[in-house]
Length: 79
Image (cartoon, rainbow, N blue to C red; front, side, top):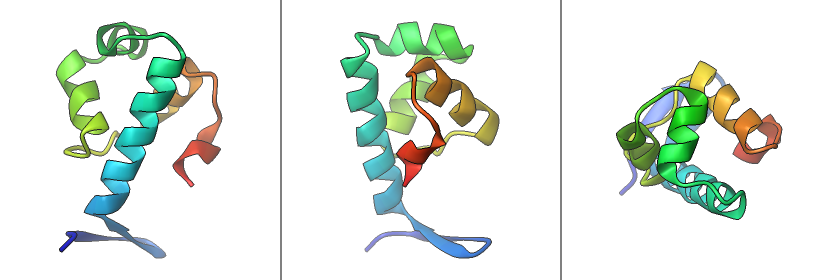
């Protein structure tokens, strides 16, 4: 069963983290970037990118914005 974390106005599940991570990985790969290259662009370490892609961690809002911009997308990718 998925872990639930209560956020204002919604319930965010572990499944959501995994879906987001998978989508992030596809976008990164479609942009021809390695995890290291994306990490360098957004100024974080490769392990952090890897853990986001595997659904282990959720990105901080400031890092999420940097990632989205680096991939040439807007914040709608989280829907």
